[in-house]
Each structure stands twice: as structure tokens, then as C-alpha cells.
Image 1 (cartoon, one colour):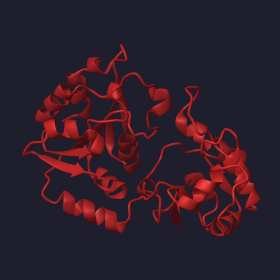
Image 2 (cartoon, one colour; image 1 turned 90 degrees about the horizontal axis):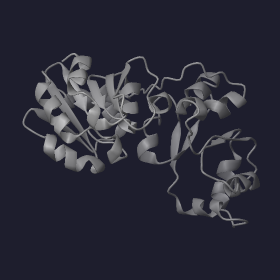
Image 3 (cartoon, helix red, strand yellow; image 1 turned 90 degrees about the vertical axis):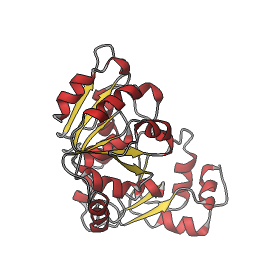
Length: 276
């Protein structure tokens, strides 16, 4: 998206996706608007020869370029976009393999358009309102501030909770505990009076908090968000490949045991890496 925006700074760019995630880009440099993919009339676009909404026909037909990452093996969605009169459609990979970094795979359709992608480190641009929220949220936090996220999309990618508790107790300064619905069990064990809980925050507000913190996490979307916001990141990897999934930002250091087992990631190594 950054390559598209840099190549076409005056273009109107919209995202069709999950609004709570795409909010990171909406009116924050990348996208002018976001439309929810959870829109009932859109479901017809996944049926062969379906009667399509006139509103969506006009909507899709109005774009000069559509870049689609939807999983569409039978090209049903693609065919229906063409029925709307879409002028140019480029398809990106719906799934990532281990042959190269995920970002490079996702950038390929942009490069096929003749647009050069020379920066594969994602960046987030919080709004003034996002940053105001972060300032108020961290108002009483003394430096250094370390944000930790003990969860991920898979239990096998998580460092043992006992290690997180030990790490929390060794951090000088204020700890910000990042938690979502999937992290509730870990968060309950890590909470204490010295921990500031950032629970279920909108992603743009969380990104603005990360601008002011160091960060320790796993192979997860939240870790990518912290890296993109500019936090100094220590990321703990196990069974997944950092060469594919770790953020490419210069502010990121990956720690991985030679066994590729999360329980073998050394606590002392993590403490030394963060320098706190």
C-alpha cells in the first residue's frame, strides 16, 4: 500500500476488509476510506452467475485498479468483479509459503504493475487523536516503558507464562501488558499493581502507545504492529521461520533457540537483549 501511495500520491485508495484492522490505514496516510467486507450483499460475489447488487456493481466498476488478496481458487469473485466492469484486476497471494519473506510475496502484484517496491519494512502513521490517547494512557508511566504481549495466534508460538512472569519482575520502569480476547488467561496471571493493562484497545491507539515504548512479543500481528510503530522490539520465535514472518524493520531483534522450541528460549538472553 505504501508503494501504491508513493506512486500515486493523489489517487483515492480504498480498502475492502475488516474495519477494525483496516482502521490502521484509514485516513492515516494509506487509505482514504474503508468498506467492510462483512456486508451481506457482498456474499453474492462468491456465487456463480449470482444477481449482483446494483450498488456494488457501480462501486467496483468505478475503480481504475483492484488488487485482490481474497482466496478465490475458482475465480468466482474475480469473474463477478469483471461483470461489474472493473477496469484492471491484479491478484495477490491468498496464502504465504516459506520460499521468501511474506512481505516480498505480498508485494509481487504491485511490482507486476511496474511499481518499484524498495522498502519492505512496514510503517504505521497514527493520527493526532491516536497520539493524544497514548499520551493520556501513559501519563503516569515512568520510563523506561516496556510493552509485553504474551500471546499469539497459536499456543505453540508462545513462551511459557512462567518466563513472562519472571521477565515482568525483572523489568525496571513501567510494564504495559497488551491483551486481547485470546490472551485473557495469560493476562490474568501477569497482572499486578505495577502493570498497566492495555486490553482490547483499537489498533490505531495501540500503535500510538507502541511509539513510546520498547516491546517484547512473539510471532504475531501485534509484534508487526509494534515494529511498524517504531518500538524497539525483541521478538521470540520458535517453530515458525523468522526469515518469512519476522518484521523487516531495523528496530527488530529476533531471539530463537537452536532447538526451535519456545521453552528453550533463554530468559537471561531476553533480559540482556532488552537492556532493562
